[in-house]
Amino acid sequence: MKQNGSQTQRPGAVPAMDQAPALPGLRPLRPLDLGGTAAVYLYEQEGLNRPVAVKVALQGSVDQQTHLLFLREAKALAKLSTHPCILSIHQALISDDGRDCLVLEYAPGGSCKTIMLKGGMDQEGVLDLGVRMASALCCANERGILHRDVKPSNFLITDQGLPVLADFGISSGIYGSERAGGLSVPWAAPEVLASRSGGSEASDIYSLGASLFGMLAGRSPYEYAYRARDENHLTQLILTAETPVLHMGEASPMLAAVLEKAMAHDRDDRYYSALEFGRALQEVQQQLYGHATPFIGEGIDPYPTTDTRSHAQTGAIAGRRENRTETGDSGHSWTEAEAGSQPRLRPGREASANHEGSQAKRFFSGRRRVILMTLILAAVLALVLACALVVGLPNGFRRDSQQTTGSSQTQSPQVQSPDPTDLSDHQNLQEGPVPSPTQGQGRYQGTTAVFTWTNPDPKPADSYVWHPLNQDSTGERGRSVQTRQPTARIDNPQGSQTCISVALVRADRSMSQEPTIICAVQ
Image (cartoon, rainbow, N blue to C red; front, side, top):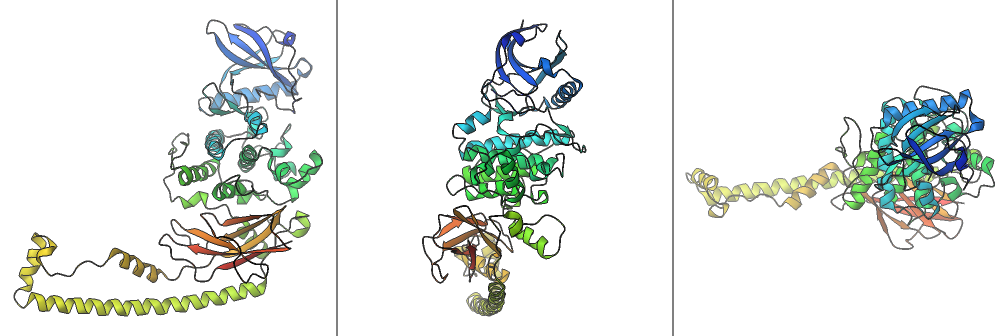
């Protein structure tokens, strides 16, 4: 298992048993793991016969800095141990030879890193893991603590088979600015690697998103999407390359979009809090499986209570990036030179102008339909009222109305309520035509063409239908795909340009009159 120290570990190494210190009330059993500054041993609490993991500073690392790291971790865990998704601490003490020791809950199931390297988890398991770890981060953030080293090896599995967040060795206060030492490059946020931040809630959210991606893909995101030569090259990829996207079939489009938002290069484009990220994961669970893992937090509802579109359907962030670039925002934006090999391409001005013209046509044609339907309904209501007056006769109309109030409608020739389907159609016409998706963008992610767009007027239960197009974008090629997320992917496309058409579909099955065409060009 990985009850590790804060520094890079030596894979497969275990501490020497003769280095396990004698501790009062604890009997050493066997070594567990070895890190750069600490070793972990399995002990048994005498009298309670309870196994515990004891994290011990290495003899060569007994210095003030190591002592401060242990003290920091002990204080952080003491504040957080009541949360069921955070590893519990039982005691902090000093051995006879002066080494710091932390007596921790023993997690016999090992770490999620082991599970990841053996193939990872399925989608349902990753969603459950994500909600639990998001609630753990939320608890830490509410108490003013940043983890700063969120990664699969720090998700431990308890004897009940449940994950807990461990190793707060390099944690810090939320308002601290110190550089995180001992961080893990594959899981670290770009701003942390670039030394623009010593860690923040946003960087912990990034690392959790990257970890969940890794649990699905079997590797860290940028090792999955690119061929990194070494750790320095991997760092450059995280700083400059496009955010990786899971291939079709490895995750639902909805979950893929949620993870893409969590790992956004610009931290302002990520979820604002661990709670918001957890809610998005819960909403994916509800959409896919009809249930959700409860979010555990003081004063926090365990399940989402807002519109299910509010978090899970915010994965497409390309449109907001483009808007900031065009308006001169000083925040980070992608450019071809910065991305190096995977530039994000924008649709041409001519296509944009044609799209605006088609919107105007749909607006005026929609108004004509509304006026026509209103006139027809007025005529029908006038005819029905005339019939009622003739059938009811003078002096008898009031009597028939009273009979209708006190008996079934079959005893009176009163006007029947309009068909609910017709009423629904009329209401939809009053709302105007279904708009086409906007801000479409296409790009190549390795051998995959990735497309994103924006819903200009979101409604409950909206979805999209998209089709691959021929090389000249004049006809459909392949079967249509319906999705709830504003994103599409085509693996191994042919030719230097790949295009799709996409239409917005409402809950009543009405859809955009003119689909939006989005292209990716190599």
